[in-house]
Length: 486
Image (cartoon, rainbow, N blue to C red; front, side, top):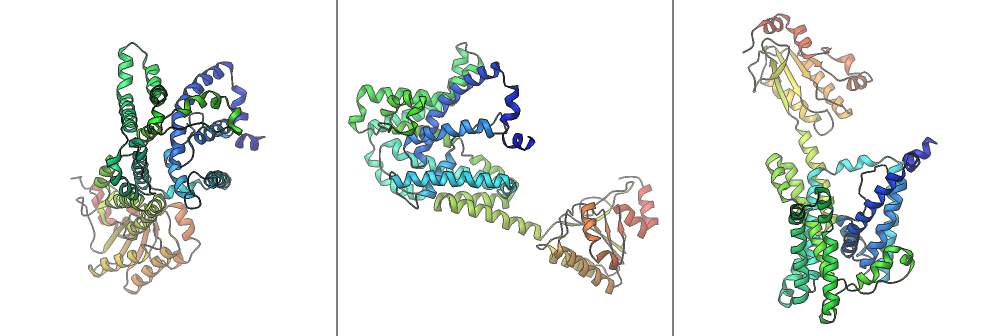
């Protein structure tokens, strides 16, 4: 039974489900449905699919997540980036508006779902860790810009095409002289209304005496209000006959059994596509975060490089190139950074058993003793660097007789790192210098015990760095410990 409860959480929380919870869920369901209508219609257009497909596709996930979902707070529904990636993927196999395009979208959704199930069963969620936050942020920002640019044509009533921001811009600029006035008024007006709703409607409703929570919910229904108002305007003024593109009749078929389709069909017929474009732009611009670029730039140039590459390639060459470049550059930069880890010469702080960087603190050192703290794991990118660092340090101090590698930041030592340690130990032995290790973590020590390094180590492995120094220069260590701190 535990196996079933693991994959069907409804068997667990279903036992505690009450009538009061049902009543609350019904209220939330009505609100979510109203909010989901414009969102699902708009994102279907982003995917290059008929708008009604968004309605159909948004129903099943909600019902299925109630059975399989593990979070009671997670919002499930269509998202802009997934819609953009859908259009990018299937446009290579079929033209938009054709039955083949719709079939390819359904097939890709099925394959994607199947892959997610397999990855979930195999516990492959760790693969998401390869997507660094700067890369994800850059990808979402670029996707938001690209999606918004792709909707400008519908917003203004002109024609434009292209799969990337650059292509869309090139095709859109020559069309700016043929903007359709009525479409532009509806589109720009809807965009301005949605912009005002996001920040201005809630305070207005609160000043009118409406409770904060209710005012917030009503403000979130702004896209629904925009759809209703513009649809009524198109119907009453006959704008569909004056060149304003509308959704038109919703095809009958399998989804006709859904109640939502029954009452939405008349509404969708006169729905202007410019309003959907405005809804999309309003939604995706909230994803654009140029402020993140400034924060990342001021903190880490390497992370900024990955973020900038993701944004530029997404806008110039498409989402696939941007995402691949971002992930690839992040991995490369990580390997590059760890190939030259921070290595500090440390000395003892007077009056303490602590050791700190000689360049940052007033510490006590011994000319016959070299203490090096390596702030990284030992593995193939930095194995040769560690050897060179020790060799250079010894070459500059001929009086050294003991070298201690302080290892509190060493979480792993792979075979390349182990071979470097063996090479360092052998080279120091030939020079009459002993190699010691201190503060080696338990898992790392367990692996070292399975090698020959400890048998040939010219020095010892010490529990703490103070123990290592005290065993080599006991008089100096005690004297420094007893000295007053400065």
